[in-house]
Image 1 (tube, rainbow, N blue to C red):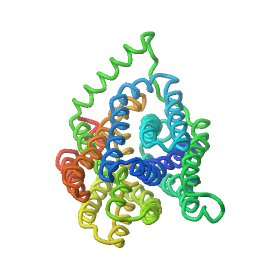
Image 2 (image 1 turned 45 degrees about the vertical axis):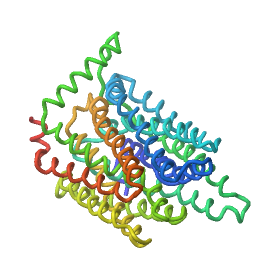
Image 3 (image 1 turned 90 degrees about the vertical axis):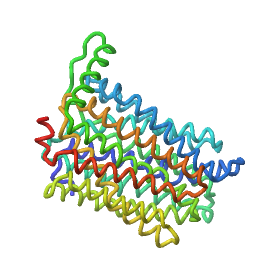
Image 4 (image 1 turned 180 degrees about the vertical axis):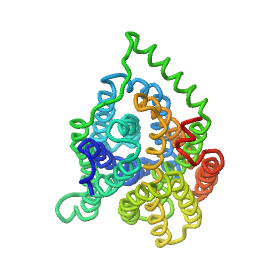
Length: 419
């Protein structure tokens, strides 16, 4: 599968393999359950614990969203992108490691926020490195295969190891609490080790020479890029569409576990269902990449949006375990593809020497949606007392995003660049 790709492309892809363990074990599956158990045992009501998790997710992504344009612009200067990428990656790794050292639910939330900042901050530079390792004709496939490797590697292998230890560890003298904490250590080590190929082989090939007053130069460039985005209406409308539909994707990823727990699934059932998502997502991320070469990435993104609208309808009407399995398969078919093609679609529109800067703004639109979605989900749950109602608000985000993409974003990449 990887023979036709260059060493730099493969090294870049493996960061998806490396950091996806955080996305599943920490952000989506094991930590949310562990946090809820610690919070409830500490006297926090179940619905409040669900809401607090949403608020922490929003807080972590809000910090990164506010910093992203500045950090992205700073990363475009010669020699800066790799240093900043490494710094944020280490912040995420260290925060994840220390999750294993506490059972205090408030400290767990603080470490989760720090880890989220490290994860999201490193991804600003990781996404922009796409333009350093490949060209426009290969961008969709490289991006999609990166997500595919993330699902089958980082999202599955360490997760399976962790789930087996949590479920069966007692029989070999490995209590559930110890196994849960071990999963956080495993995530940190996995993230660090599989980042090494990227640190070794991927270099910043496109850059801007910095002036002596680096801060002033950064602020001027950030303002100029903002004006360019506002001037190009097609790019601006794509970012707005992305804001809405990625809101739904992010909310489903971050809130799925606590949502299932509130709907009556036990911890192991929920973990198995989310594992199904990872297994299904691997081949479909690759399929999305290959189909985009035939029908275009814009149409494949729209297919993902339609799939997620169906997901929300199923989520609103959940009644039994089989409904959750249908939901897991549907999410798996679209999750990797819609994220990978959004990344590469945008990458084709931006100048290579300012990739980090432009992806900083891309990150703003993506992360602010992740601020709104989980917070809206938590507020809805607390006000109504019914967790399922959050699915309707998420569905509205997908409808808005899809409508903007259909009616306001041109079908041709060349036309978008020319505007």
